[in-house]
Image 1 (cartoon, rainbow, N blue to C red):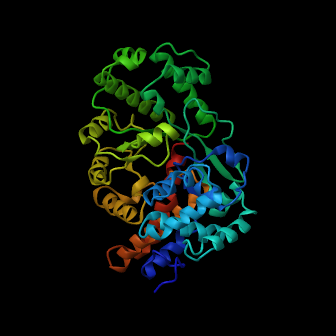
Image 2 (image 1 turned 90 degrees about the vertical axis):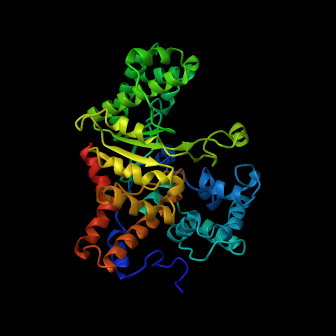
Image 3 (image 1 turned 60 degrees about the vertical axis):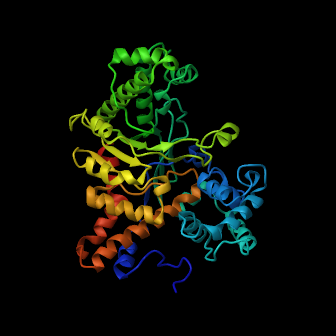
Length: 444
C-alpha cells in the first residue's frame, strides 16, 4: 500500500516518476482564472484555513450541498471554523472526487500536513494550519507555488489599476465582453463611461470596445475570453445588428442570434489584428437553481453541463476567417461528449486548439480522458496546458495534480514501448509550461 498522498501519488511506474521530476518545479502560467487582483496587489493575509479554502470556492460549496450541509454553514453567517468543520465532515464522502485530491494536495503543499482530513482530524488540522497561516499572505502563497503569470477575468468596463507585476508575478487582465451579448441600458452607460464616449448605437459600442481593448493591452492583456451556451447559427449585417442593438429586449430570438454572430465575428477579427488569443467556453447552463440565484446571485455552485454545442455552427464560425484573419483560438466544452468532435474540427483550421479539461471535467479521469481524446483526434503536442479557472488562491495545487497525471500518461506510453523515451521529458515540459509560454510570447 502506498503512503497516503505520498510523493508518488498518481505516478505509476518509473518513467512517470522520472518525467514528473523534470516538470514538477516548472513555473506556473495560469492563463484563465477568476482571482481577485486587488488581493494580490495589497498582499492580503488569510485569517484562517476556513477563509482560505471556503471564501468564494463554489467547487467546495457544491460538494457541501450535495452532502446535505445546511446553507448557513456554506455561504451563510456561520463562523469560518464551523464552515471548515462542515467541509471536513464531507471529506470521507468525496471518495474518488477531484476535491479529495485537490484538498489533500493543498494541505500537503501549503501546510506540510499529510494526514487525511475527516471529522476526527479536523481540530488537529485546523490548529496546525492556522499556526502556519500566520506567516502566509497572498503573494507569499503564489511565490511558494512558483507562479509566473496570472490572467484574471475582467469586464471591458472594469478597473485595471490593480494589474501589474508583483514580486516577479505578472498579473494581467483578460478581456471578457459577455455582457454585450445581451446589452442593457445600465451596462452601456457603464461601458461608455469607462471608454469616455456616450453609446447611442452599435457603432459607438464597438468604438468603446476597441478603446477598452487597447487599454487592456497597455495593462498587459494578451487573452480574451467568451462564455456562452452555443455558437451562433446566423450572422447579421452591421445594419441588422444595429437595429437589434437599439431595442434588444424586443428583438426576436432569431435577431438576437444574428446580433451575437455579428459581435463574435467582429471581436475575432479585432483580436487577430491586435494579437489577442481568443478563448471560447461553452455548453454551460448558468444558475440552474432559481432559489439560490434569487437569494445569492451568480457563481454559487449551481451551474451545470449543457447539451453538446451545434457542431455545424462551430464549423460555420471558424470557416468565416482565412488563416490570416483568424486569431489564436482555444476551445473548451463543458460537455465532455463533445471533445472528440471538437478536437477533430480543430484539425481543419489553423490556429485552433483544444483547451484543458474544463470545470467539472477537471478531475482525475476527466484529465486523463482529455489527454487521450485530444491526442487521438487532434494533437496533444500543441496543447496549451493547465489552468485553474478558480477564485481560490490555494487552488494552485491543481497544477501539481495535472502534472502528475500528465507524467503518468506519458510515462505509461513509454513503459509500454509506445512512445520515445528520449523525447518524453521535453514533451512533458512543453505541455506543462512551454506551449502556453510560446503562445503568449508569440502574441506579445
